[in-house]
Image 1: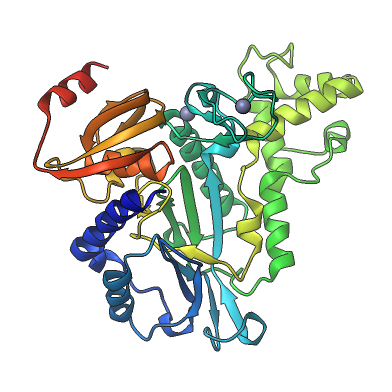
Image 2 (image 1 turned 60 degrees about the horizontal axis):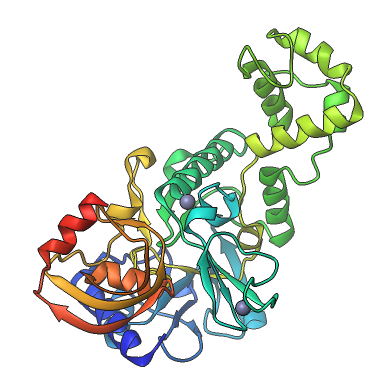
Length: 396
Ligand SMILES: [Zn+2]
Ligand SMILES: [Zn+2]
């Protein structure tokens, strides 16, 4: 990001922390947590500790950092070197990223960039740049409402797993929009708090169905009244629609009989389908790492300028592209040169697609595009609402 753009984004972050910083709540046992922040220029600052949340609020006002993080673990000495911290326990955390769900819309809104000749185009990354034949191509992923809806569906499935398979109280499960392209789920208190990395890896494997063998299908040892994956498989087969691509009959017992006659290849195909439709695609690294510092709720995500925000009880009603805007002040406009930006939706309006053009946009839209690497600020204008722009965007 160029210097001018960085300054404008930083000022926007500062305004957010000035107006809304008090929304950042203290984590439990704050004095046992490790904090960190990423400045707009420079390296991550870690191993910080705060006695109370007021001290963190003050730091955010002063620094207006690009990212603010807190450990999901508690330690005896959070400021010590990692191996001297004396780990106590950690909340279970999960990260669901829309990009990993590979929705078909990616080929419309993703962008590739050739590091050799600078060519940029919409669409999935080709193997070689058509202009210069280089294979040094970067992929820039964007998330649309469809991607975010898919991530929400995945999150609901995760919650179902946590409640049914792990017996976690729903009141302990908190769901957050990550501020970029997915959801974070954290379990504040559970019997898994003291589980080490290996134990957490087992949970991640269970959720992603890693190591689940197709032999289970040939064994036919599963009933809807079973526990764990056996219950899931049985219910899945029983609840498939009457007319289904894999089975001729619609009755559960008949389907089991058909399954026993499946060829090896058919078993594999059905297993892949079963896993795709029943597992949860989490980022296992996040769940297993107990020394991570994790983006704090109500702080800004530097990849978008949006807020990491708690979704509330009704996840279905939460609209991240409306409810996670940091400072939605229609009066604040900005002029940006947009290099390349797919059609985006933000704050109930749609913008773009844009390619190599100058645009006057609401400041929060400008911050979003610039933070995603789609362009740069030419100036920041306040109170110059260009009505034509809004009307033309509505029509688009
Ligand atoms: Zn090229
Ligand atoms: Zn999409």
